[in-house]
Every structure is written in structure tokens, then in C-alpha cells.
Image (cartoon, rainbow over the protein chains, first blue to last red):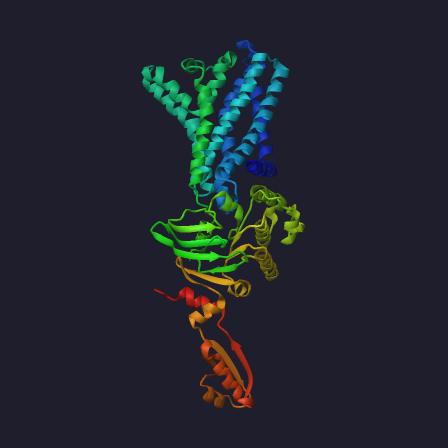
Length: 273
Length: 297
């Protein structure tokens, strides 16, 4: 039972030792602060407090950064051990493959959560200090941290999947970059193209919102936006959110990590060290 | 069957269209040290990985005690030292060994074990700064965790200096003395010759020999080499004994193990004409060449 915790402890040690935790936290803090200050202009015109605007900006940031940071740790998780030749030894111990994966996942998710909480928390505190905050905008901040962690969990699991499928860590890194590009950039571009072609037909009305929410990155965006009216106004993305039931985005973001982990587990089972 | 620490019966393994293990049968009693020899690609590492349950086998059966490979019991009972072992460079030796101790579920004296393999100075240094030999010693330290029934060592001496090799074999002897069956895959023939109880030789996925060194020599019928140095007249000596003249003063003759005593009696009977006698039984190297290269089909 406690074997996966031994793996978790070791992985945490590695993340601290190779400065990943420090660098990731620093990146989050810097980007969140920069966006908070750069994005503070529309406060007056929209009539919302500065924290709300800040959360809206940071939501956009997190869509790009959370998957990226997650993939940056995850790609090496299995392929790296195969490359080093240490996986066969690890697997000769009583810990099962599921336990090993779970141990790594727990450590990586904890590290991501730390980086997100510190980064968004710092920026949120600064925004609240300078431009005020209310209960609603504080809730939005908490939701942002929680959903960013979930989004990170999705891409950790998908990163493990690629790490198990790839032949070597370099190939896994390449595949991860491709995955990031598809989910975060190309998917939306494709949808945009489809909507323009359709010109407000049935696709745009009924299919498009569901296709959109199936992508965890978009589900993340929708969840944060639909939950808070102020954030929705600040980001100007209300249309798509209104076309879907309220549970759609949370469901997508909660199902994806489980699905991704199951797929990674299945792929890891087939790895011959 | 259960008195064996490791039983391998008719194991087959295919990789693509080639059969990399073909009807392998081998068993190790507790405390036995067996050398597993063979060329690169003969199937030694594949066999070890099948024993560990890391790769599936197509036919036959493997038992560690009574457990099947890959089962929780089997994983607890086996220790493994991979070929050219490496660890995460960011961890220290102590941290890495502590992880393994926790995974194996044994209460281990981590500093004591690292001291046993001569790493007490490097306890809290990062593995990234270790030499190849030090990594190998760390690998050996994890083999000693929690009294395994079977220890599988894949090329344990690669990268070790001669003193470390001596230490390694001392540790292997200790393991065997506590009842662990040790299987050592190796290329270093002269070392395993003196340090193992039995020799198993693999060739192209088949087990071509599995016996004690003496029995293997007898089976192979390799000749014993006698070198006789003449005190005065080597030519007369060569004529009398019927061997070959070599390097001026000596005569070399080959005889089968059965004829050995007869030849010695003849030489002893020649009295003053013989200055010195040197007898070389077939070395493992000769045996290895005999079994690993000869086509037995």
C-alpha cells in the first residue's frame, strides 16, 4: 500500500533537486504577475474588480502553461527510465506498474499544484491589494487554481502515455510537443475554421459546443468562464458557454485525467524493459 | 521440486521470427553459485529477464521456489543486478537504496549495506558524480537487501577494477552461504572458473552445457597438456615420449584424462633425464570455446 508513496517521495526529491519545482514556480509567478499588471486596464469600463480581470487573463495563460509544464515533467517518466536502464531493476521489485505510475503521478501533480497555487496566488494577492476583490472574485481565483491543476493532471497522464509509447526520451519529448500543439492551438483553429465555413448552421448551433468541450483545454476555459459572470465579460466568451449544460465542462475536465491515466497504465503494461 | 530455489523447464521465447530461447532447462539449489556463459546475443539477458517476469515466455515454465515469475512472492524472493546498471543522477546513493529498501518492504540498514560494498564515503553524494564502478557497487548493495532466494547478476564485474572484483566474489560467496542461489551471467571466464559451483553455457538460445567444471572437461574429452623439460637431451626425450619439441629444451604432449596417470608414471620412470614437469588441465576458456562454438546439431 505504501509502496507508491516511496516512489512519490523519491520523485519529489528529484523535482526539487533538479530545480524543476523552482523554475516552474518562478515561471508561473512571473507570467501571472505580468498578465495581472498588463491586463488591469479594462477594470473601469467593465465595472468589475481587478482580481476578476486578473483571473480572466490568467485563465488564458493557464491554458497554454499548465499543459506545457505538465508535459515537461511527464515525457521522461517512463522513457527516461528505459533509456537509463533503471526500469528493469525498478520493475523487478514488488511494486506493480500501476503503483509506480501512481507514485510518479502523485509527486508530479503535487509539484504542479504547488507551482500553480504560488503563481496564481501571488498574482491574485497583488491584484486584490491594488484593485480590490470580492467573495466572487476570490472564488474565481480558487476555481482557477483547482481547474489548472486538473488540466495539468490531464496532460501529465497523456505525457505518461506518450512516454510509454515512444522509443526513448527524445522521441517522447517530440511527441509531447506535438500533443501540446494539437490540443492547445490546432484544435481551436480547426474548430474556428469549421464554424466560419458553416456560417451559423446546425454545426455551430448544436455540434460545435460539444466538440469544443471534449478538448480538456477548452473545457478548462469554459468552466472558468461560465462559472463567473465577471470573468465571462472580461474574456468575451459567453456564447459557447451558454449553449452547454453547466455540467459539461467540469465533467470533461474530470473524466480526462482518469481516462488518460488508464490509457497510460495500459501502454505501460506493454513496455518491455 | 520445491527444494530447488529456481527451476526452469523447457522455456521458449520468440522475438519476431527468431527463437531467442529454445528449450532452456536449468535448476539451482539454494546456496548454489552457477555461472551462465555465452556470446553476446546467446540469450543470457533474455533468460534473466524471463526469470524476473519482465518479459513473457512462449513455452515452458519457470518457478522461483514455488512462485511464478512476476508474482508478488517471486518479486520478493529475487534480487537482480542489471547489466551496466544506472540510476537517476539527481539522487544520492543513500536515497536510491532507501527507495529500494522501501519497495522491497525490508527493514534495511542502508548505511551498513553501502559500507559493505565500499561506498560509505559516497553515501550522500549524487549518483551523477559516481564512477561506473561505484554505480555497479550501488547496484550490488541493492542485491543484498532482504535475503533473496535467488540472485540474478548480469555481467556483475563489468567496469570493476581487480580489487573490486575480489570484493564482489566475496559478497557472492556470502550470499551463497546464507542460502541464496546465485546465477552469474558473465564473460570473465577465468574469474567464474574458480568462484562458481557449476557452469552453464548458452549458444544461440540453447543450453549446450550445464555441469561442474570437472565433468564438463571429462565430457568434452579435452586433452591435458604436459610439458616436460629435458635436463640434457630434449631430442631423445621427444623420441621416447612421442611429443612435440618446443622452445629448445622442452617437449609438449597431450593426453586424455584417462591416460594421464599412465603418462606421468612413464615420465617419472625416466629419472634424471627429466628436469621439470608442468601439467595444465583444460581451462574454462578451452571448454567454453569447445561448447560455445562447436556445432552440436
